[in-house]
Length: 371
Ligand SMILES: C[S@@+](CC[C@H](N)C(=O)[O-])C[C@H]1O[C@@H](n2cnc3c(N)ncnc32)[C@H](O)[C@@H]1O
Image (cartoon, rainbow, N blue to C red; front, top):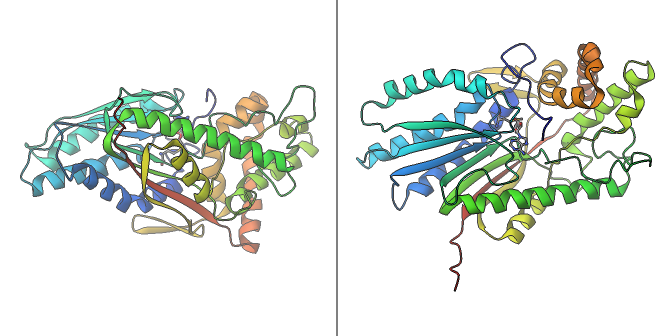
């Protein structure tokens, strides 16, 4: 959690410039966001409405869900001839996130709100909340709607036990669960996800009002096999790093000891943790396949080539690679992702790559009264 951050700024390799896939995922979840917000407002419109986006990152996606949420609230209030509530917007990410990039776009955001919504629109207060969503971030019962997109597949840490001191790394030569990984590796990943997701739910449960709603999208899995579907992205990165290690460009022992803090859960795993934690009713929970080949960006459709996939993956994992391999890897970073792009192209030409999304919509249950 001290290392992970998406590539900062707005340059060529930044997350801001390479997050089309994540923006598409946000649009897939749009109908669920709308339904959830209308659900929050169905019985009453609160004076002050708390909305949080967890794992907001930086760039255009950071404020897009928030703008959409505000539009939905405003339209509902207009339909009811009511004054809109004061909206408290909390943008959360890890402390090393490029919050400045978001803050710099806020004056434009507020200006646009004023113009679009007119004089009847009450103030909207936006704050940045640095910290991990695997713990408490907000005061009790302060949130009405929580959103998180493309973030909850990041674990709070690499599963413990994969790299025991003195012993050989259990997942040698691999960055994630692979076809050749011992079974205990997949188990360690699944256990870490369970612990993390349960802590996430517990924290939100304390922070949300009764009947508050939460919409989560993350990378998921349909297959029972965790080394299938989108795991090919990690598999190819392992192969690219190993090829470079064989040429002395990166240290092989570092490749062996690198494990990604990532897990794509199945619908069953998500459902099981939600049920065990007990604070939320499931309104919708599904994993489904979204296309890798073409990703719509507004009116424009762009082919998902190896280069595009490599840019997207680089914007996300570069900080972790630098921290694990040391600053020396920066010299070969371009070369690594050039090779990776070629491998992805080759893979996409021979396989139908699967991109599995999990969409979860939850309702905070009434807390049991203590006697
Ligand atoms: C791929 S980005 C998604 C950003 C944005 N929601 C979007 O859809 O474009 C994932 C974000 O989750 C953040 N993240 C990962 N683990 C986190 C944690 N434990 N607490 C808060 N944010 C976290 C990362 O720093 C990163 O900015």
